[in-house]
Image 1: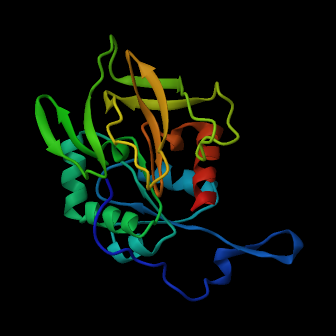
Image 2: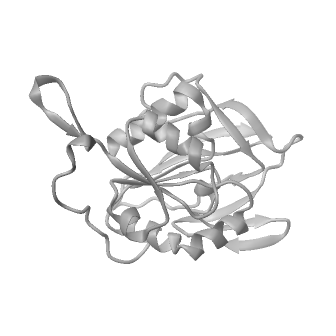
Amino acid sequence: MQGGGKGFACRGGTRPASQRYPVDEGRTVTTKSVVLLDYGSGNLHSAERALVRAGAQVEVTADATAALAADGLVVPGVGAYAACMAGLRKVRGERIIGQRLAGGRPVLGICVGMQILFERGVEFGVETEGCAEWPGVVERLSAPVLPHMGWNTVSAPSDSVLFAGLPADTRFYFVHSYAAQTWDLPPSEHFANPKLTWTEHGVPFLAAVENGALSATQFHPEKSGNAGAQLLRNWIESI
């Protein structure tokens, strides 16, 4: 599923010289602009540092104009699904996400920022409506130890953009008790098949999704050291 609404083009004009840097052969490459959506949830400081380290020019804001104009939008998230959705709706974040995707503009969700992209979440018997960019439900993992906290490997498809250049045994940092455990979006003859990355803690669950302009990770790349930095760099270079 994709959000409705009109897409917004990137603002025109020449960026300041401080936003450009020279590379080989006399070419000039423009630093990608990324908005880290500030809606009251997420590790904003560590995420901002990680994105800057990966080569982006980062603005932390809830301003819709900035979020729609940036080359990329990152939606962080920690804590409860319902609380994250409440915070997101206060800044009309679900509309920002939908409008960007309607125009093919890249969005990256992290941790609960991935979970809220699904149709709904269920915590302690309470069901909360999500952004519904993807069908399916986020539910509690059936595992002997929760939260799932620490390092884990993932199984990424060979043509993944996010995991390009990373060895198969690379570990990423997780901290969560809930996840999407199935992929319910039916195949389409009009769109490329999503790239699904899986891992396991008690049961299999989605560790990452790459679906056109919309990508997400259940783990925290900003807490995953050099591997997370490479993943963020891959995403930034793709936007």
